[in-house]
Image 1 (cartoon, rainbow over the protein chains, first blue to last red):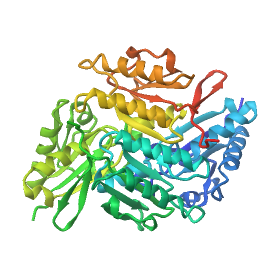
Image 2 (cartoon, one colour; image 1 turned 45 degrees about the vertical axis):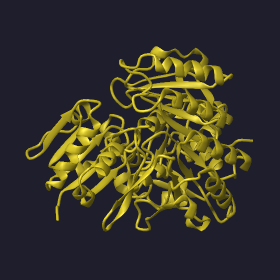
Image 3 (cartoon, each protein chain N blue to C red; image 1 turned 45 degrees about the horizontal axis):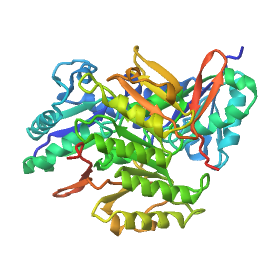
Image 4 (cartoon, rainbow over the protein chains, first blue to last red; image 1 turned 90 degrees about the horizontal axis):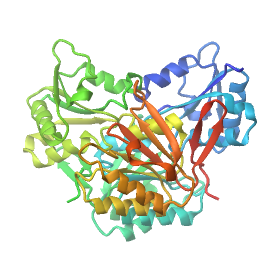
Length: 251
Length: 251
């Protein structure tokens, strides 16, 4: 019987004041913290703690490494930004677990939720996701582009507000422009779009504008994009940025 | 120039270890905390703090009261469970603000995100929302039932995983059964459904079963319901509840 544990923890969007006490406590008793380089860089070193940082795009190998350490009796924390269950490490760990050796299934595994980028961004500009909404990963690394377009069309037809993760990267410079042009064709109104970059960090930048005026280079790897539904409204304020919200009611 | 402030803060799903330090700090300097009775009951009393609890279904009046107190110079915190921007108090405050007197727009207003019920529930059973997903409020108090059915049909067609808030209450005993029957007709597969009640509290109960075996009375007012996409999988574990996850990839 192993005493190793595996925790998959969300560090939130960037500021330490957005890390839950539950996650802080798990980090305090960890023997090994493993994750993508910039997330591991957020963890203060201390004696007895191994910090294991790896590059992007090696999520499955990282997950296997974490599971192996835990089965050897270590107290392992896999760190994700945001919420580990939203386009982050939790699914990668379970994919590795399902395909891995039987003892991995005996492990004590817990997922600790965090503040996901979409909801941190929404809070910064009001309540744009205050009615029914969807979350779509715009990267076509792991799914066909045609499926992304299909989901965008159906999401507009359903009149969801939307949160878009991974809109644009150096390796995928073109996709977001295609998504944006499709949305601009489908949404024939003045609904706002929000580009929220590096929310809660010193590099935070929030850009609110009408969807029809948005251009692809407004997004980068650190941006989450929110799009209103047809009902989403702007409240203008003197000397302050506008508030964006989606009303609770549909008449 | 008023010095009053209005913070709309998320208390998370129930356990204090899921409240962010940012929210804890805002509560520590508040003069007035206002919200629905069970949420205000979570705030420890202290000298100089007014606790103002009101009943369900008076969200707009509560929002107006909070804005009025803030404009009078108080440091007001409106408390929501979960995340205030997800089917909670933030949209109600902005509806009141938009329709209210001009000085309300000069207020220093901040929304502090929290762990929303859907993501807390997902973490408890694995990563069922690990791919594209949507969130739908199943209450027809504030929108027509036909719109709920339309969104369910489109969400199934888009093959989203789904989170359902407010599935069933004493005042709306029938709607969830209709939604469930529709989903059972539309989804002709073995995808799992999860009934997650009072997550992170002493009353927590997680029920994972095939959608086709679900019945309406499995949900109540304290339940959030998660439904997998067609790709959502179960990992069986000896002596432990299964893990539910949606893979990151679509072939």
